Length: 167
Image (cartoon, rainbow, N blue to C red; front, side, top):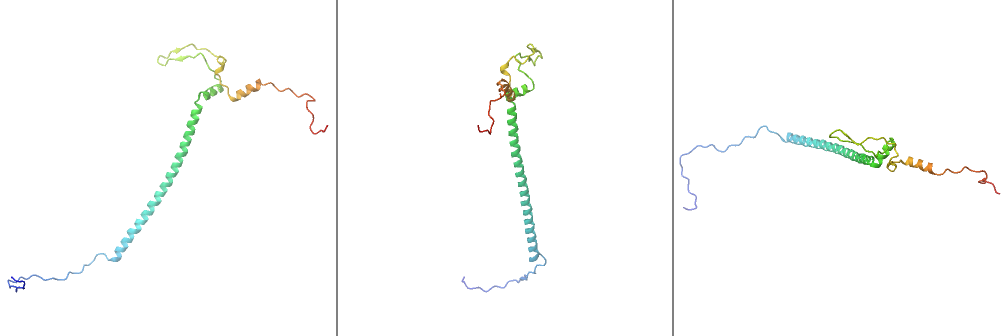
């Protein structure tokens, strides 16, 4: 065969419908309603973002206040612990016991917790049995030093010359 077009042979004719125009679409959203919906979504998103940012800032302020309070409380706790440690020292306990009128007792008596029996003999003390163990407060030490110091002699007539005289 050649490249020439061959005449078409006529065969039985079939009736097929030809092309026809597609009808235009009725209904649906136009441009204006779509833009209004898009603008509404955008405004709602911005308002939500603004509210979220405001809430985050409020919570940040609360966190900062709570952290400040926690720091103050930790300083207070450290101060109280230092006070407890200072008051638990043997010297402070001895000072408080002396202030209450307690004296050291060299005749110790113990209670056996398992049996409930008393080990040792109870003996009353006067307070001068162990003089080197008593604690003296700074006020007591000052009073003792003042009592031990010699009193100044009273002034005698003629010990000093009057001021303001040129003789």
